[in-house]
Image (tube, rainbow over all chains, first blue to last red; front, side, top):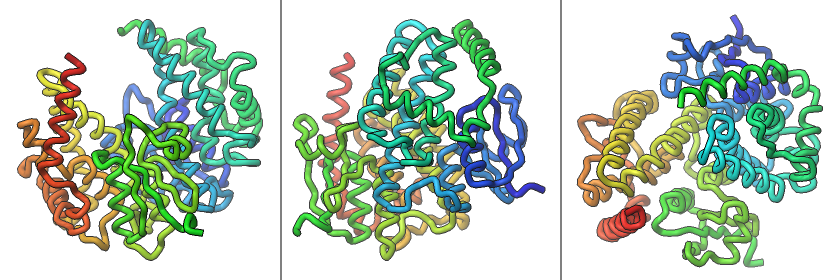
Length: 220
Length: 230
């Protein structure tokens, strides 16, 4: 019986956050695929509060919420550290992780709305990208410095899911020339071997999200 | 030389986020210099220390700023190892504390603000939502207080206690101003007992403004909100 199991669903960016962390630390795990349209008794048992994925099961004990899972993984398996060891730098990392979690939903609002709500979501997304460009990266290659860390993982959806949202909605947030630091980060992030080897298929994602958007807008 | 080792907290007495950090610093006995900010006229130091959000609280130590109350509390927990710890040592228990802190922060805070700032149907809807979320929390914290009795003292008070206090500690004030029961000892006995225990701590009583001042503040905020949305 696997010591570590991951209940998740493709192509959730939150699922991939946990995959990247586990792979970067070389931790073996068993993937249990959830059908979010038909949630399993297992998911409802292990995450009764939110009924969401991902859920990490370690020795049968559930941990929920992707960034809380990552902090747990970091504490149990400290090799290939994903957070700075110096407390001040760790606090700055956590500040940006919180920022990523609070502001990234704007790109999903761009994806699932139209009209005025959509315009606002585009504006919020651009503000978020501007803040990251101006304050978060500095001159570093990655948020973690020379190597990626938890902050890079937290912003991962901007590197791969945002371009798909752009394709599906026809809204370009990352245009040529704007946000140069962020766009360079995106290129570098996708080249990191563990990330490159663990990304959902782009065409399948596009098809999935295109259908999703059509269904969401039709139900409004 | 005086600037080093000095902890400065930029806050606002009326802010629950500011209060959290103030309380944590008091609990750990860390001497601090408190700077009361005027949010209509933010100090240059605040804007320099938190250029991203321009918000309080900001904690500055050795000239280095940290913003976001929960980030500050985790930092305090990591740097002052002798003091009462804000988070448990065990990683699984830490994950549980972080989970419930996140729940209170994301599911309850905004809805409570809606309760205090609206009336009529909007308020009724928000009150119902708060009530439902409190039931979830009541169920969830049973595992944190397995003997059904939240015994909180100044040595074991932690992150989640501080966070719930910052939102619902003043529930009697909220109930008086709004005329609505927020924490019903019959529906959520554990939460009620928990808040009562925390509110009784000397360090908490000392950091809590007088009841009348809080009532006046909440009335003022509520009237302003209702006027501006009219």
